[in-house]
Amino acid sequence: MRYILLVLALLFVPAGLAARETTRPVTVLVGIDGFRSDYLERGVTPRLAALANAGATGAMRPSFPTKTFPNHFALVTGYRPDRNGIVGNAMIDPRRPGVVFSLGNAAQALDPFWWGEAEPVWITAEKAGLRTATMFWPGSEVAIGGRRPSDWMRFDQNVANVQRVNTLLDWLRRPPSIRPAFATVYFDTVDTAGHRFGPDSAEVNAALAEVDARVGEMVDGAAKLGVAINWVIVADHGMRQTDEARVIQLDTLIDRASMVVVEAGPYAAIEPAAGTDERVAKALLVPHEHMTCTRKEDLPERLHYGKNPRVAAIICIAEAGWTILSGPSPYPVTGGAHGYDNADPEMLALFIASGPAFARGETLPVFDNVAVAALLRAVLGLPEDADADGKLADVKAALRH
Image 1 (cartoon, rainbow, N blue to C red):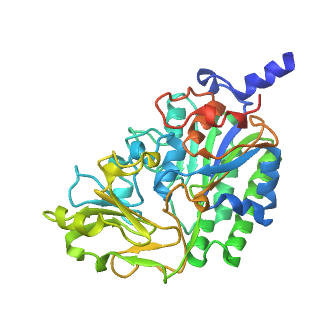
Image 2: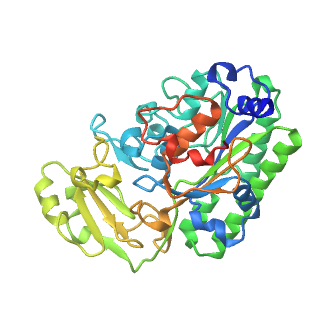
Image 3: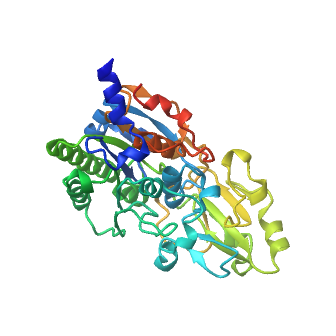
């Protein structure tokens, strides 16, 4: 009995004692962009499969829209995009007329203005005296509430996956006093291959195998260093095959000058231009083949989307496998995409939790990805955020009892 109590004390140290604890495991959050949940069954990821078999696993339902930035922020805040403020990979805000937040606009993507509506777990941990370190996690390079992780790196796709692994291992190699208690690593290669070649391609399988090898290097490297790790491995969304023959062209419905297409693809966020609300509504808010358009306030409640002022006035959601465009596509439509309704089974994302804090051989039913933040808080000894959308109860079975 004394042994059990000692183990539990090491796993769940109260936040006030965490900064002084030198033997507690490090919690590492690994994000593999675009890793659809069923990719784990392809037989090309033996290291990830081993972690899943030795821990807890299951499929996660992403938040709508099933895009990268909104879901990475949902995973670490516990708040869905409508409440965490990152409502799309591209978005507008009425407080900044004429300005568009987008992945390609660094001046906006790195501006704390966009990220301050919810607190990510690394900020909560830092406030509690826990040292954190982030490798490329979306939002982690921004000063949120005037704070950043103790160690962070600005995203650069040219930094190879091997270098990302070595950075994590360098952090773990530090003396306990300056070693992070919580760290993140982000890999984008599976998502990139999925977009270019489609989810069923040989290129995606190769990307899966490559990332799996890097995960193995992290696991083996941490073991050689003698550092115990609680691994939480997640994806932001899945991936679905698209085709240039399945395109809905908005320009055939209404002239481009009448609207601002904030984002297009599997879903489209559309803001009528000044004085065109009625014209845009008549063109879009009627039945269409392969697409449903709705005023944001009339979206289905299950999407939990449309109340944030950053959500565009009209949201159009394509039928699975179809693509909404306005004019020529800036990228090849043949390949793969995400952004569809989060009820689409091909949008389901990977979840694995393995390490001393987690149950062994546990398979969770499908759960909303916002519960991951609550799980991270529990393992780090941080209090649960009672106001968050994600609840620990949804993933409590993943914890070792």
